[in-house]
Length: 184
Image (cartoon, rainbow, N blue to C red; front, side, top):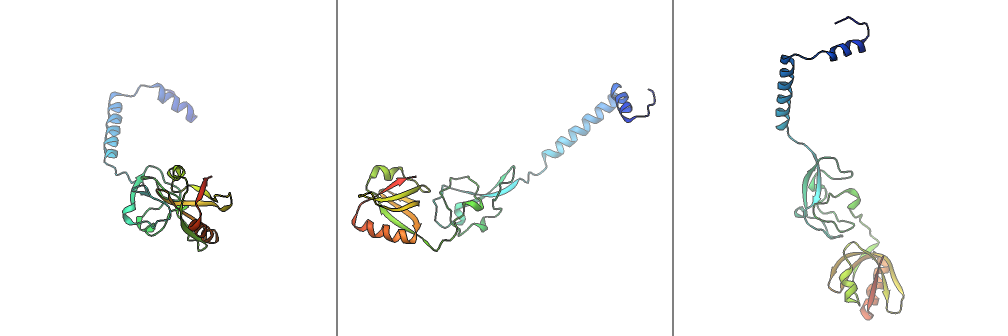
């Protein structure tokens, strides 16, 4: 081996030589011990609260609706504790196992109200799902409310959340007339 003044020449000369059997065995032993030690290393993960079942919007969350799960990567806007979400409500329906984030939570709106509407068309009532956005229309074509959020459905009855002024008008009209909803 020749002595060289540059670092790159020294590295090249070391790489040309074949490592000894003792060196290779020592390296293999160190790598095996490292692999064995990481097998017992605890996986901390990133905790996030998920829905334990399919959840409708607008209903206060209970402890039984939520569970804590560990993800490989952090979930943006998620919560690391179930207690932070108990009593809060959701904007839209959520499927089981989906992480809940700050964008999923409904803000308390004092100007909003919910109203139950019996939909004239059973076929349409079967299609509407919680979280959908609809317009409420009379049989004459008058639009009573726009962009109302479907909170719940039960047969022909659809519970809508909309501005309080529109909710009062829709409730009064639904007493005497059959109403329809159009999906957005």
